[in-house]
Length: 428
Image (cartoon, helix red, strand yellow):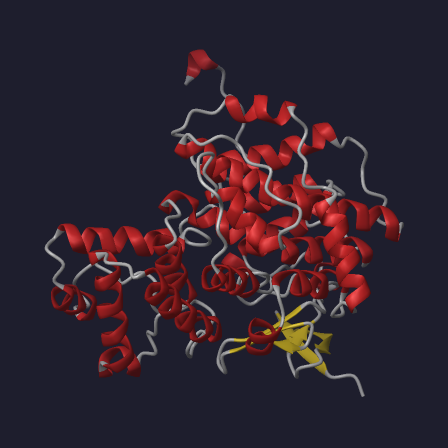
């Protein structure tokens, strides 16, 4: 029996079906609202209460602290799978067989090369350019070197586009960092795994033999998995709405990168380190800043604590907290900024004020710590986020196109002037 919601407007009643998801989520289907009511719409700034689509990719329950990709818990995936397996799962819907994974890996490696002319575009940016701006531009520039649009009705054409961007994106990301640091560009090594190769492309020095570090690579692998998708957030919604105009995959991804750039979204882990640096510059007194955070009249806010969606402990933070501890122990880091971070985390996990309000350290807090420990520049943190989110964006774009969703076209409530007759300039 179909569940119905009844809406009464000016004495008139209208009925709308209630859609039920597979995890007991309910949504009122109002796609006929304007038509049956003669133009009435809804107002939901930020779309906090609006479902923009039906999706089979990611399930998130912020109250219970649950995150699942295609039904698999984030805890199991982070422990038992690697990033390429998770990418395949998100994009194609199932975990790959050994044969499928081997082919996926090999096909991606075939796409590691980037057209030499892309270097000319990179050379046009000053070293001071923000890596996210560079990455967005380079991703968009891929369109010029791959001008044909993806035939979404062809599984083969879709697959080729996916492995192409999965191969080239980490090269572009690594190049943005090497450009900023004045290092020669590196194409990596196709004998290495996906994450190991990323690490090599970012850090290999021309006068040193590259050495692998399992703890570091495992931590990077987990970070990419934990950031791979997160339902209909700002950047993912951007990818879907840009793609709904039938813009190509690369153009849609470039738009997602720009959306992720904002400090309220992907820039949060950068903001964590900037906060820690500010505390250090002020003498490193964590007790002082804990007191400031508790003072409702003080504008200071602890960055990296609590989450807009999770009303409990961020499940990703539980996983990456362990990885952060392993990395710091392995590298033997002596860094006052990281000491401040550990001090703040300890207080937040034990102090009644934070525990009662569930202001626990989130994934941005711990990812910022790891990236700093690895020597990744603060401005590159959001690029690392984008590297992880790539398969999620691809999966969302693919799903949107295959479901033949209509072009995104939000409505508004106009609050400007009514009709005004034009007044010539000499009479104004």
